[in-house]
Length: 297
Image: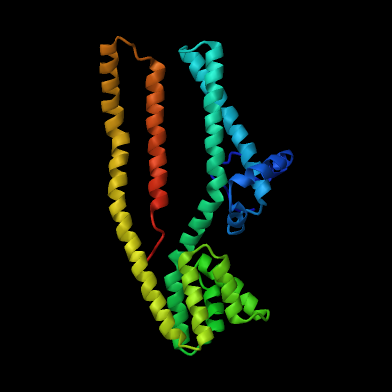
């Protein structure tokens, strides 16, 4: 259980022990998260889908309590609401955060599986070039895979090591590669492995197949970089709006409109407005970071 899940305040090991009584509820919630079982298998989170949902519920309850108590004191201190109104409003907003965080945490294994695939694809081209070089030098495919598994190619080396161990234990090369293709989340690795399998079964040249695969992957990665550069311009503009334009112009417009309408703008409203702008900025930074392609060519 080495993988740490962001937004979880309680570590997985401790939350697993606390959440034993919630696993029945977790079983019900798994129906609303299709594919969670397979996403967990592709990550380092060593939990069943029922255990994982129960852990999410425990963490979301803690988040609900923190936000409810914090908002209650904020509403009560600035005295914009009565005691009962502050309590009801803080609990209502706390429930919204509970549902939001539960949705995010439930979807996280899928995100993690995709990020793992992206990390794998980062070194895939270099690993394939290494295999091509060794095969061109007369080394067998099995020995080339063993050498790459011992090299420093990150997750690619780890995945190939599993395949090499299966072949060493007596499984046929094409069957071991087929299992790798089926279990991997990486689209590029699946395409690569299936082409190698077809080449092996057809008895064709591995050198020609590897050269074609490497060329195709390199073109795709360059396309990803160009697309991200174009997309980054749009995200930069949106971030500048929430970082500069909306806080300044928005505040000025609210003051002007409220004076025309004869309504006063409370201090609490301004505080909430500023907090929302900061939250949106952090979300945008996170989105920009997650959209960055993990390629190195």
